[in-house]
Length: 185
Image: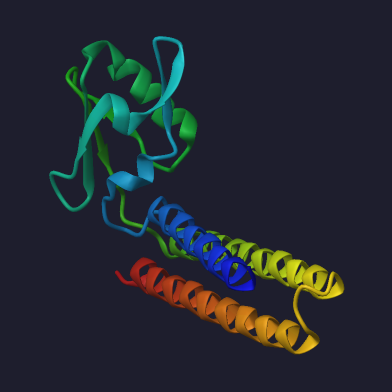
């Protein structure tokens, strides 16, 4: 039972890392990346649907994104959704699709992006620590109920801390990697 708690905590921490990766990919880093549009939804037959489910998204050049909807009637709706998302780009409608030309990032934009990913990384670390806290409280309850010994409690607390340190170090590494990507010109 105590080993299962450790494995379950590790699995939850892994999911936290995956979620952080998805969040990081939506932050602009100077190059065109279709994932920066993942958070944008368009109304499709009355249902808010992610753009990538109603259109193909391609990167014809390093600083351009082209969105071609499967249904041409969505072109105007996609254009409005991109404007409403306020992601710092101006879409241009060519009748068949939407072209987004990404302007070069200014130093201020880069710093704001780094601040955004720093906050995401800190939120990820908080989530990891919350998982640790929940697991340790479960171990303490088990010790109180005499399911494990005091020595076992100490051992599992140490193992949980090692696991937490491993995942927070991974978050730091991902943050540094993304920060380097954003700050490079």
